[in-house]
Structures are given as structure tokens and as C-alpha cells.
Length: 304
Image (cartoon, rainbow, N blue to C red; front, side, top):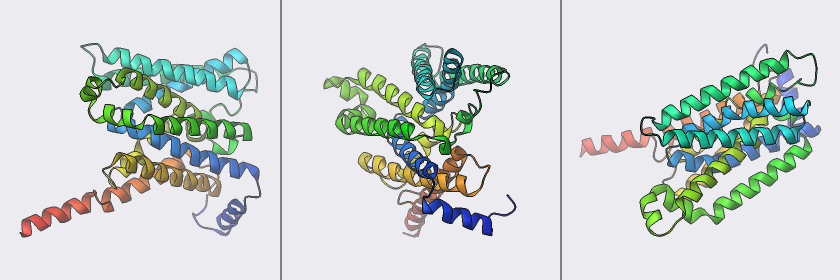
């Protein structure tokens, strides 16, 4: 990459927006869907103080992917996703179980599960890559993501999962809202807070699993956390956080896919996260609830 803007990058940008290759369309749509579903699910994690749980679950998918590959003996995407889902949900349950122990804080439980599961995954990945078969080629794309490798079948699966998860959030919105902001009151009026908690863990696991191919296990947590965190500087209403977060996630996904195509060698996941980080910086500085607004308010009070 000998310069950011050259005749080659201009030609590639024209090529990207001409949509003459199906894999660019799949990559773009997959990245946008990932941005939307991660933002919607991640909003409740951020508001419940469970942001790092997404990081632990994301890292925990790697041993599931590797175990499924070892069992099946081929990069069969359905088997890999099932393995990742099982591993992710087990990790989420283990974090909850360890956190309930009186001598263990939730952040410590998350750190332990994240480190152990990811360490196991790296060891298994090293074993697979050192095996004589060539079938493991591309398996390490799960680390940092490669949206260009998404097939039409995987895109349909991702779209279906996104619709189901977003529909579930819409249907359960009132229960999720009251249990997020006032769990004690929610229990007193009969809201099934425990069922909602485990349902949220399940939704998190599914969202992470369908996102890892595009974003990668290392950075999937960033797409769960950054867009809704950005939205919190723009609005203080939960519906607004969900909608604005989803829009920022979609924009981050689209720009990330474009950036990854524009400059060869740039993985999709890091590109998406950098775009999301850019939107976060803008929201932090210039949003209605951002730093400059706070500084202006303080200056006005001092002037009075």
C-alpha cells in the first residue's frame, strides 16, 4: 500500500460501487447486517453494565469453531457456527455462574473466561494449522474477519438471524426496558427478569456467532459496544439509542467493507471498528450530550 489515494485505489472504489462482483455485494450487506444486529443487542449490554461480557463471548467462540472443524474434518460453515454457538453460550453461562460466587467480581469472572477460552482456541487453531491437511485454509479468518468470504447462503442465514433478533427485541421491548433500568421494580410487577437475562445471553451468543466471519472473534465486542455507546451521546431515550446505534452500526459496516476492499490487506473487522470509533469520537465531541455541550453549559453557568 504505497499511498492512501492513488489511481489504483480510485479504480478499486469505482469497481466496488459498480457492484459487478457478487462477493462485494455479499460483503457489504453482511457487514451492514452485522453492524445493525450487534448495535441492537449491544445497547442492552451497555445499559446493563455488561459490555465486557460481549468480549468474553466473542473470544469464546474460537474453541467452538476449532472443535467443530476437528470433529467434522472440513470447513463446513454450518458445523462451525453450531460449535461457535455452543461454546459462546457455555462461556456466557460460566461467567454468570462464577460471578454469583461471593469472592468473585463480575469483571474478574469475565477476564478468566475470556483468557481461558481464547487460550484454548489459539492452541487448537495452532494444532489445526500444523496438520497435514489443507482443508483448514482460511480458518484463521475467524480471528479478524473476512466479509469477502461470506457466501450467499451465509448471507441469508445472517439476514434471517438479524430479523429474528430485532423482532424479538421489538416484541419484548417493554419488559427489556423496565428490567434494564429498574430490575427490582420489574420483579415486583411480575416481569420474568431471569428469563429475560438468559434470553439476552442467548441473543448475545447468536449475534456474536453470526458476526464472527465478518468482524472476527477479537473485535466483535467492539461492534457490540461502540455504536450504542456513541448513540448515548446523541439521545437519552432507549428507542433512540437502539435506532441511532443501529444506523451507526450499518454505516460502520458499510464503510468498513469499502475500506477493506479499497486497500488490500486490511481486514474487514479492524476497518469496521475504526469507522465505528470515528463515529464515537464525533458523538463524544459534538453530540447533544457530548463534551463540547458539557463545556458550553459549564461556561454559561460560570458566566451567570
